[in-house]
Length: 365
Ligand SMILES: *[C@@H]1O[C@H](CO)[C@@H](O)[C@H](O)[C@H]1NC(C)=O
Ligand SMILES: *[C@@H]1O[C@H](CO)[C@@H](O)[C@H](O)[C@H]1NC(C)=O
Image 1 (tube, rainbow, N blue to C red):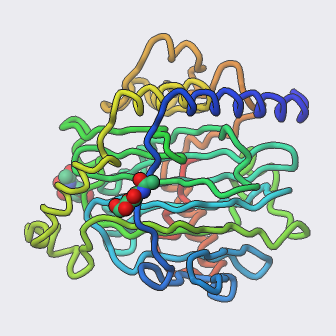
Image 2 (tube, rainbow, N blue to C red):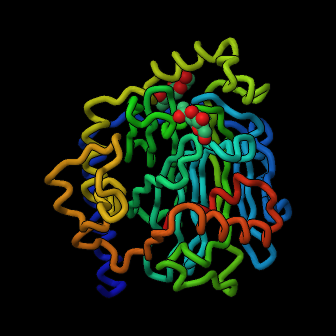
């Protein structure tokens, strides 16, 4: 498929999605936003973190010297983690922007994680978005899904949100839920359960991000700038003592009320309209699902809702049969260990000593 055709189909998707949003009547996400200082702190690459004068927009740069990232000042036991993000434009092969929750620096061997990962691309080809989750160190059981976006994420800000309650996880793009994972007994510890921090990072993932490492970051097109605004964090702050909470201490007083409020809020109520919008988004934009990847999972993991009509659209590799985009990224069948090792090496190159950042880079390709 020529690049022109890819652009044309992206335009078609945009029109479809706009029509869908218009008829769905989804309620707009309405949460209180905050200044950077109120809820976040630099994580790495301090010189590459640029804050606006009003402190409500923060830009993360990746250049030859380093990537950069920030972290929430608190950990949260369940919550709503959200930002409007504008991704770097033009040639972005090898660049990864990540917006995720994790507790990998506190619980190294049994960490939890919820991911939005944005994978850069060569000129004329769109960014792809991946969602994923890990629970209790389930790094050998990636649960990746990938989508193309029904808009150009480099020209305007769009909101990306992660909702995490005791009952379910939902990922939102603007007002549309794009994925929901309900907690079930069968998932066991694979459902994230311990307090997590919010992270946002931009970094060089030359070895895997674009067509399995075929296209590396080209710094002639840098610096690569990802901007974040409309920053929002809701949930129960748990940073007093996340380890005590998990070791049988139970949630802090007050977390039960915060949890109840979150679950009762519009954000957490999956209305029929939202379900329909989610189904449409997935039909039109999902290009990979671990649930249909029988090479990796001969038996779909327990939370998978395998729909036969949907399954037929995907190959046994989990990739869309009639690719919206040509050439899916190369899969790694090596499990978590090799990826984690590569990730750790990359992290030390960037002088990032946080295990959480390394875990990021262990995302399955
Ligand atoms: C958003 O929420 C605030 C406070 O809860 C409320 O005052 C405001 O009217 C809401 N805005 C919209 C557009 O619903
Ligand atoms: C989490 O993993 C640890 C060891 O890795 C195990 O002992 C524990 O039972 C697991 N917890 C859950 C909820 O599965």
